[in-house]
Structures are given as structure tokens and as C-alpha cells.
Image (cartoon, rainbow, N blue to C red; front, side, top):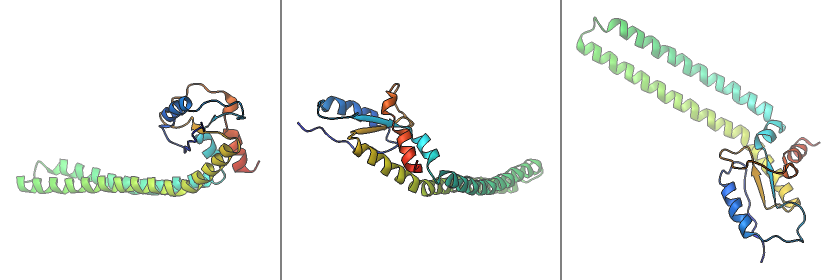
Length: 182
């Protein structure tokens, strides 16, 4: 019976469940050398990948610009609310209703711009990190193939259920060395 080969990618939270099924399904073979499983810490790898500091700096600068625009709109909204609170006593019911409608529209505009800014920040982060993540993935896939490893777990992944692992199976340093040319 041939062992199943399962390819996994950084960030898959379901890897742990898949590993439990795979361990039960793969018979051990004395002819196979090396570990069948290994792990990495994607956070450590990403932070040490050439180009990460520049991508992070670019993203932080762009997010600061977006944040400044949102903060300016927040100040305008706060100012309008304060003005309304001060004037509401002397306004007629129809004028009060009109001002409340204006405030609701301004608040809706603020919420929409905040959501748009968050979406732009997330998209830009993906654009900046995608080439780094692809490069990391290629290195991990290469090491996995060289060492005949079936699964590589990411111990930094959300929902990771690995509570103990043999440090010999940690490929993080090996991946970083290849990425940095050491």
C-alpha cells in the first residue's frame, strides 16, 4: 500500500485534524528515512525574510495616512455632534430633525470611509506580503520534498493544537537560512 501524500500550506488551521487522519492512514515503512512530519513557525520566518522590513514599513506608512484621514473625519463628526447638542434646545422640531438627519448621514459616511480604509489596508497588506509568502512557501515545499516529509505544520497558525514537538522536526531555522542565503 502506497502512503498518501498530503500537501499543506502556511496558515491552514485544519492541518492538525488532517494530520490525525493521515497518521492513522499511513503505515510506517522502515525503508523511509527522516521524519514524516515537521513544523515551522511562520511568524519567525516571515519576520526574517528579506524584504519583510521594507514591506512592513511601507504598509505602516500607508496605514498612517489612512488613519489620519479617518481621524480628521472623526473630529468633524464630533464637532458636528457638539454643535448640535448646544443648538438643539433652541431649534424648532423640524430643524432639529433636519440636523439629526445630517448627523446620521455624516455618521454613515464616517462608518463607510472607515470600512473602506480597513479594506484598502487589508488589500495592500496582502499585496505587499504575497510575494514574500509565495517565496516562503516555495522554500518550505522544497525542503519538504528533499526530506520526504508528508506534512509541515505551522505552529504559529491560529487554532494550532500542537502542544509539544521534537525540536529536531523544527524546520524554521532551515527555511530562514535558505531565504536569507546563509
